[in-house]
Image (tube, rainbow, N blue to C red; front, side):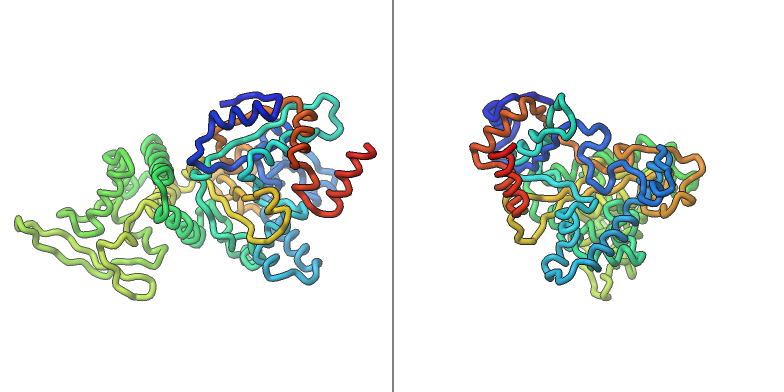
Amino acid sequence: MIESIKTVDEYLRILNTVTNINDDYFYRGENQDFGDTKLTATLYRRGPLKSDCSRGDTSESSKGVYEYNTWKTYLDAAYSFYKNVPNLTNNEKQNFMALCQHHSLPTPLLDVSTSPLIALYFASQPIKNKINDDYGRVYIFKKDNFIPFDNHILSYKYLMKCRKGDQTYALLSLKTNESIRKSYDSIRDLEVNANNRQNNYLNFLISRILKKLNSNSSKFRNDKYCLDISNCLKNIKNPFMLYGSIRNTVNGLSTNHPTPLVMAYIHFLNIFGIRPTSYSYLNTNNGVKNVMYHYIDKDGNAIDSASNKLVNYSLLLLFLIYLSNYVLNDTKFFIPKELNFCTNCTLNWGRIRAQKSYFIIQSPYTFDGKNFNHFRSKDDLPNDSVYIPSLSIVHKPEPMYVINIKNKSSIRRKLDSMGINKMSLFMDKDSIADYFKKKYYV
């Protein structure tokens, strides 16, 4: 839903209508409609690579190449930045990606705030070199619809693992076993501590993938194994049925041997070092034998078959994403657009505190069946590739509400009278000087 406002009071009235006092939200202000690059981290915005510009190549095709080189280019730029900035503290190294963001290096982080008035400040900023100022935009997101990711992902050590070829940060593309393991830790933490809204969110994500898998069954790989999985999925209508069918078999509560879908799940558990070592038959009261599997973890320790370490909704979500990549033969990859991750910075910067900052972590979609991170040069691109705007390849959060901001100058004056201005939000000497320069001289 979209509303328009001309005053701060109108803005606050709309917020009281569309937000709930019991919920938490993220807010992002943008001072114009940026088209297909709105809600896009700086790393994924359009623009040719420096090497292409030096050759005079600023065509649309070169911009397309840019989209696929951005991650490698960022790692190289971050490495060079680190090597040329002396005396970084341990805390700055731990939050290195946030440090890059702070100093205007492109990153996959999208700034948001937990304060609606701070988002309004950014949305009300004038557009440079434009006489007829466009509307600003405030985008509102439910915080419960984001999975908090451990902020180790911001560290220099983590980024350099990626630079040396560790594709963990094929990141939330979930194309590697390592990225699946790391994502599971965050998703599971959310599930264990979840409120009802967050549990509904996880179930919604699972439902989305189930629906997409079933609607695309005709595109499954043409072999017996994938066709059998397709037939299994047809009988599963919701996350609860999926949970029950897998848990009953894995935990020895079923008289049936594992279906192809359950066998695929047991294989998926190998990613976490969990594997069955044997199975036995349990006699029930009515004389029927149940199949009972015995599992060990990566350290060789036995796992109770009834343990939720074997089956939980976090594992089921990642399993379906993993499964989609396999059965569709890399031609499609179902990551729901509603699957979003966020993190926070632990640096004690005045600016971070003043702006009540969080980061949404953005990751790329796949392209032509290959992961974005596989492309390293123009020669690596498919011959028939064409320019694809960032909207098509970047995983973007869906706002629950958008507010158009009109009459920007009046709103800025009102916010200034409330103590929300460049001086209070940025707090560095240059920003404070610029604030007083514009107040007294401009």
